[in-house]
Image (cartoon, rainbow over all chains, first blue to last red; front, side, top):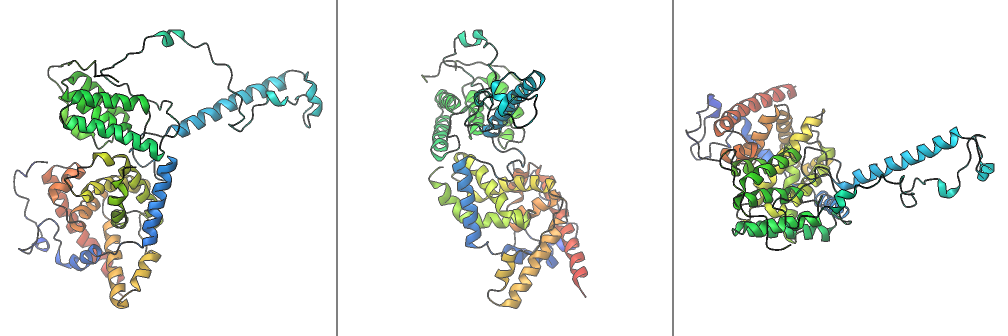
Length: 282
Length: 169
């Protein structure tokens, strides 16, 4: 923020006239003063309340869960857990529905139908054919469609200049959100930050890439991504930086980094693609 | 979590609680919103500028979080909390009660104002931040921030007057 181009406007109301010894910004009309003073001296909550907050935060950090208000605006990458749970539930439901439909529309031929307590036409499925609602015993969903082999045969880029962030949460290592995992994430992000601060843009990109590989949907995705944009700018690869910024803004439209990144990435001008394709090793 | 997270944040939890209340969060939701704020801060912990005081940085999180909260919350009235009443009983009871009443009246008046007035008043008047800092935090041009602050003060004074008159027998 730059210095004001002109001094602040004089208050229009006499109530806003300021005592000479006070800072003009926080001074209020005289009739408000007792109220403001009382509020400024508001006591902190009890130690128990503070402790409850701390315990709650630690619990959420340990479990990697969300609070009641996690959906207030964007702040962090969505947790992969609800997605996986919903997908699993949906898959199980689909399989169960298909099997039920098949069982009800075909005559009972299964010997175990004798044991069926209801519906003569509906044979009781043998235990191994009934998908359990419990994820621990859930049979895998229907056989997957033939996997596209071309994708698997494609050579993997060894040192991408740009880290590809997923638009949807990708499978992440188990234990995401646990203190040790979070600590590892933080170390990688910090490594990138330090490298960037010391002018080692390539090292910063390498650290970002390592974070992306280890924690594709990690808790610090937003931080890593913003650092990557900065590192790309620092390395002179403005075109890639601009692309990354665009994707970043799509994913995190209300990020606190947005303004600073926008200021950093030139909107137009010569696109340069520096040699960032080969960071020094993984 | 980084080793110094709690070392820095623990002393600030009470202050955060107070700020969240000022920013229009229900008593019943104060602790939950404080927890959410801590989680968001934890995610960005490595980014903070060590050369600067941590409070303005925290305040930026709180302002945004509470703004989202207010948008979702229909009932924005702030009530006396049990905790507040209990604190009112410590020390000189009469003075404490007067202070509690003044605080609650002020918050009632504050929360009757538009959100953008509330935010700038909390930042500049109650937390005594410079307008330049508040403008940066709220993403406002400086002159807009000054104008908004001036109007917000007048509106707040008018709201307090209304509530004071209403409370008189």
